[in-house]
Image 1 (cartoon, helix red, strand yellow):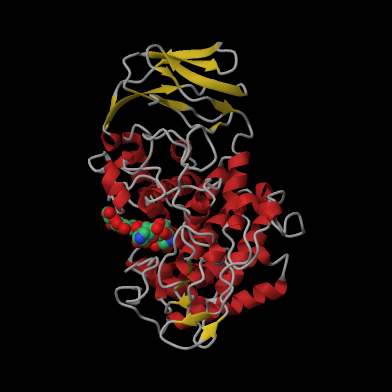
Image 2 (tube, rainbow, N blue to C red; image 1 turned 135 degrees about the horizontal axis):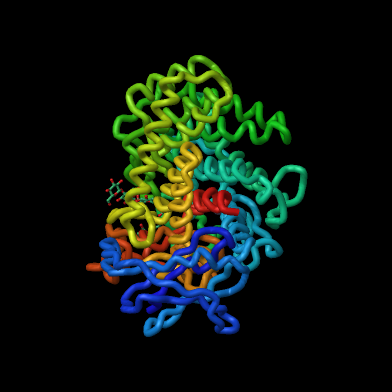
Length: 529
Ligand code: G3I
Ligand code: 9MR
Ligand code: ZN
């Protein structure tokens, strides 16, 4: 077991750099060149920290003053060395490339070519028509990305993924323009916008043309075995329309439209109509308790009892897009009751806030203040939690299913706070969340497949299991103290929360992957490249 822990992928030259030491007695450490063994820096460690989430006593060593590009290791007498890691300007380029290419590899309804997909190539999958639940009606909902380790396609998951990817693009568009080797690469439209459009086109098909409502998901009745996607041939079923799907659809499409103004006017018009119709449909759509799986469908539920935040997000995006009073009124009414906060498939309030804070249409001074203050307060809470944690993350003891997503999303809140306050300590706290995902965590694992020194080899991801090789560029869910699958119960019972992770293909609650876990990590990376 390694006892000196760093971000395994590396650090950019001028960023702050901190290593974690556990089970050690030494008080000083050194940084050595991994190739020559020559010491380039030495210093002393912090006083001990009792880290409850991992049940460890740890000390920290700051080596930010090492800025010369190279490959290094951290050394402490009697405690061994860390894994080698790089310091350089471009350390995150390869991981960004794979994190983004994952979306191409998750494409449904088209061939993934040998040339671009390697061993994960497959013929067009899920190409049959899908039956609308409870009817004989069949519709074409071919396309989009497979959600996760399963082959379902779910609207709420899609909406937040697209929002994150577009925000990543907005934050740093030049890194997303070309050379990602997707079929549309290097044309006039930037690669990121092409890939996102693949999903948007599918989302448009999920809208009921009659009512404007949006179907919650399309899946088979159950999950298949560990097969490639074209081998899942059970009938496809479109689950009923839901409020969360309809509202997050409206929000996401409204957010996306301006990105395509310069590339495809017709597409923008079509999207505008779709978003407007979804919003209108919401006025007659009520679902107390939220979407629930029909009795005979057991695929992902994305059950979210609270749909007000999705409506809040939709109102804000529709206002930002159109400047129309009715959307403004709807948003103001909701903010008056409560400022919704949070990023993720379940909590989308912060997306709404972001839209309102950046609209070019007139805003209400009081509403603006309320949102700003609440966002700062939320960021401050997360900041304080991360200060108390030895590994620098804001989860406290709460490691839930998809905790790595929470780490990434909390980092986005910290960045929002940094942008509002210009206080750099928020930015550094966000960066520590990135370091955590890339290896500076109690599992000493880089949670992105194919990157770092130790990374998941057995993700709960059907193509990876079918091909017996982990597809690169996927962020796994990470520790889940709830032990939500039999494998987790068998291997993790009694472990401290931050160590409830097992690299086993049966552990879907700790070792699955999803499109909406990669996405906030990409947004976070975009800020640090
Ligand atoms: O929100 C509560 C929180 O209040 C509570 O303190 C905490 C304690 O356990 O639990 C939280 O709820 C958890 C919820 O996720 C939070 O997002 C539930 O326990 C947990 O069971 C639930 O897990 C979700 C899981 O589906 C099961 O429904 C994951 O978030 C969600 O990412 C996952 O999504 C699946 C799809 O259904 C199917 N495709 C794969 C995908 C990833 O595993
Ligand atoms: O593969 C499924 C995964 O995508 C889901 O997140 C998870 C929870 O809904 O369920 C997985 O499927 C398992 C099912 O729930 C129980 N039988 C074993 C399946 C894994 O192969
Ligand atoms: Zn498919």
